[in-house]
Image (cartoon, rainbow, N blue to C red; front, side):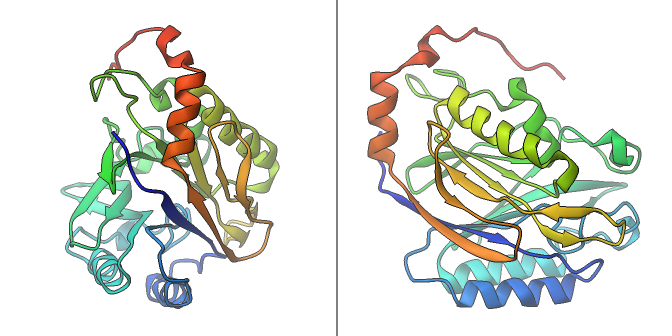
Length: 268
């Protein structure tokens, strides 16, 4: 399979605490300022509220304002948008990563690994299955924050989802990853790119939240060697990069380490 280059923009912001309208307005301004030709925009984890257990009672549904806003923004600008929000589904609230395309389609991944050190596992429901999206000829796997620490769940398998091909070409992590663990954030993003022979995008937030947690940003777009194509510092900003499918395919042909990978299946 061949695909065109993918133009991506990552939006790193200082999330306004518990204020979805303010956050949506802030991101709408960033979208309007993007250069033409962007294919995909990636926002941080819980981009409408910040990473908060206290915002559960105000969690939206899939029929709520944020999903409608994402669909409208995607259609207006012609690019896909992904990022996570708190979504109530039945009796449970999920840390749900939304994937919205210009045609109005919406898919989602519910965060599987819940961060017990902050009590996330006691208040949110865990997801089960990975989501693999096909977009503009690319296979993409969107994951959330703490998932980054679990390489088995992130593993790019060959011939499992698609015959004679890897599961995905681009792995995405959205996060609220605080500064005391910033080295781990940077290191694990590179490791996931190298071991999976895949582009990796990691989008973090900046600033200090109402729990007095500080965030150093460090959002990045990495190539399949773990080398940065775009890197953010610790301030709110937008970074852009072009991902080459031809370069990825050529490298996988020269260095097909996936052919020697251990075979396995996921268990609940």
